[in-house]
Length: 639
Image (cartoon, rainbow, N blue to C red; front, side, top):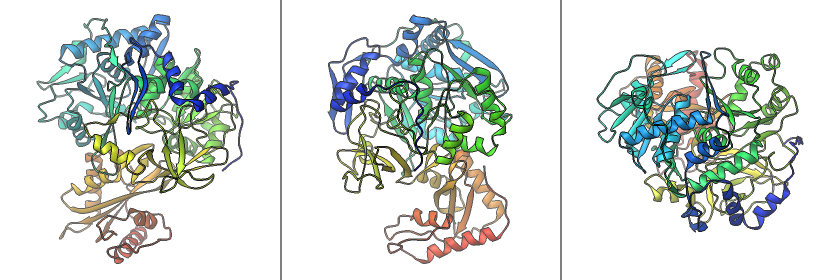
């Protein structure tokens, strides 16, 4: 734990915290008045643990709050400044965005999309991704966005689970100078799925694509569609979106978020954390395929009428200075990125950012994983020139919005490099032991929420029982985050990583079971186990241990084939940095693979208690394979 830095933005609103601590339900009731409601709610919170309904019987619309409210005040204000890897640019005002969203919403209705229907969106980081989401929200359809780096099998699993009626995709996208053929991936993903009625294809990369009977060109339908679409007056609890996140069981979980409570949470937290002003140019580097993109690229900024930069591609291509070029060119004032990205930028040294004019920056933020103090100090010193506060935000797909962070929009507090700071007003977070007892300061334990909050997930799509089991079975009266943490004497939280078997690779959550299932789907693999070990850039890297089927002989060719296989069935993000062929895996007597032992071997750490092992020789087998491989120079399998 490090020296504290006090860098303020001139606010010190202690009343907000006081009101929130006295009565959190009344507090959120008052916050909800900042949203536009067609009909006011008659009860702030209906809590049938573990299911929460916020602003009961209130009627609102996410698209209306994100576009109409702002357009009525200043429709000429720029909403999105888009730039592609190849240097192409676009600009959309709030009125232009509203008109475009209405046209797409009318197209959705014309092809049979109704309130409650699911629409899967598989697009690159282009304005049409935002527009498709808001068009769904306008008519009450439920959007489910899939990160454009996922494979066809991963998409298929998600489309089948949501039973999406319509798929929105593009011919292709651009990444590192290459074209990613998105339509081709979708063709494989939805082959034979009769419930998928239409595939709407936006021409972005201008490459040839197949034309099936379900395919429709975006331009043919959207260009001539009416520019007015009345927003649906939706119940506060109406589902807004499903976002799939990996868990410890192989099947991804469909996290379901509602409308009213979610919007209130996002609107308030965006204002508090980023202290957003009329003159700001905001840039969040997250892909919209992840929850950060939903909450703090789409809904949060737009509800505040912010102008934001949107970028397609990687931030180190075509040169490692690309992100700093963007800051200088657009005079970005708020930069919100990940510790993984910062570690990557750091590797290129101080010369690149110091060669650019970064003086426009006034606030820096991080999200996705804990930031280590060294990176925090580099961000503060080199990028922020020791004048920009850093907001280190902790939250999850399931929480909807930020739960722990410093909040320059409300107060000035000392910042401690590596700490996410304190819980937000109206949020009740703490650290408990195995039995659910509050722990004293500096003691490691499990991070939990002791009370409901507006942005919390409604449930898991189609599986209320799994929702109860995953989040509410460890502690019956508290939400279990699955994270390990410490709270210090000042009430600051320090995150220690996941307490379960979910890996965080470059800020992306991947379930070990999903990756292992991908390996086992190969004809040569009998068993698979993966673990994560610390990585200086990605946060964690994947180490895979595989047991081959009887009669299959290991070879470099097979190992290369296995790496390509996992890239295909799960996605490039799941590529292992290290892969080992072993004859047995360490398991408990009940058959559970002991991944902590694998992690200890891969990290070259001391192995602890092995009394529950079914076969002690398995540890030696894994260790020997690890040592042998490191004695032989082989092709490095880093993505």
